[in-house]
Amino acid sequence: MLDKEEYQLIIDASVLYYLEGKTQSEVAKTLYLSRPKVSRLLKKARELQIVDITINYQSDEFEKLQSEIRRTFDLPHVVITKTLSDKNDTLIEVGKAAAKELLMLIHEDMTLGISWGKHVRTTAKYLKKKPYENMRIVELFGAISYDLDQTDMLSIGRSISSKLGGKLYPLPSPIYINDPIARKAIVETPLIKGTLNMIENCDLILTGIGSIYSNTLQTLWDNYVDNEMKSQIVKNGGIGFVLAHFFDQNGNFLDMEVNDNVIGIKTESIKNKKIIAVASGEKKAKAILGALRGGLLDTLISDEATLNYVLQLNDKLK
Image (tube, rainbow, N blue to C red; front, side):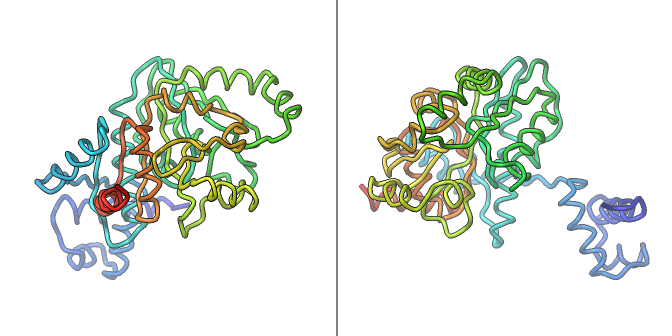
């Protein structure tokens, strides 16, 4: 937690550097600070969104890539950001672009369905506060235990709903339930039943895209699918997942119990909803390609390097 003095220093340094055009050395001299201290203050200003830097990425190369993605996959809309040297910085840029795009699609009296994961979490972080009348935010599949990772589902939902002035409809249930009797008992409880009905009527979905081949931790795949089921998913040609449902390289959802056992949105509903997906990183390229081939998305937000790799993979797999 920053104290008032530190917060004011961040503002003073930001004004001098970004508005008055002083160098970091000049800012340091003006504020009687070391240059490394000024550098840390300016970085903190961006992290806290005291300073919001917007870069217009539109160029001939970007427009060419956008057109090729739209044409190749019959995708209505794609937003592309620059790929930065640091993966986390690229994630932030993609998240900021997704937050901006989401606000353009939101309107009053609508239901927004949400997923969870680092891309959706980053989008929620950079979403600007803009309340809407009669806004409903609904979790699209059973949430993990909130005690295990409160940065995920519930906190994401709370963040988005508070910024949009909406009411959050949680789904406090396991993601997958194999036992038919237990499943029936859970989905018939009033809270779960009400949220499931809300899911069927959602107007727009914000989600990430998961890959079973990523070398980074993916909570759903790594913690909520057992080893036997993982082997079956791979054996059946699974390459990625969206909204806890697994699909193959052509975007076809696997005909497996794991997809049928999701407490939340149904497979057929995913195909019929307007989906905005945010995903980046070459390790997710196969999954992104599958989702595009299957026509699962209406809008995709990603970075330049990832989408170029997606096109390369598509050419190889023809």
